[in-house]
Length: 98
Image 1 (cartoon, rainbow, N blue to C red):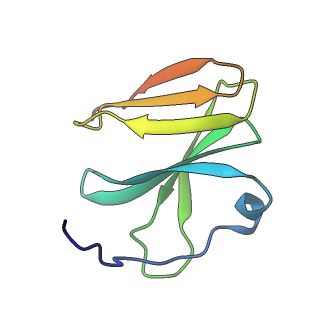
Image 2 (image 1 turned 45 degrees about the vertical axis):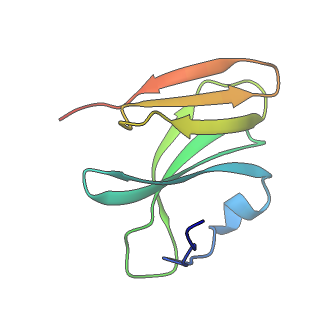
Image 3 (image 1 turned 135 degrees about the vertical axis):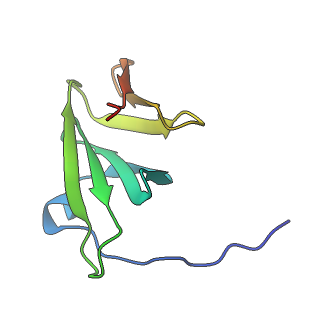
């Protein structure tokens, strides 16, 4: 088994600390490291974690769920993001291409 090394550590924004959340592992979209988080507030947040500071920046908020988000996952090619909520709704989001 391969070892796991800490690559980056940052604190979550104050508003995210009050929300129970599920986090998708780091993905790299257009060479920018991003983390996806879904939470009890029914929103899905995409954070840019590339900045030099310790605070990640929300680059997109996805709204569509009506219950707490319980799971988030990218497809292998990172073109689709699937999110699921506690009521059983699954939403598949397609990443915009430039």
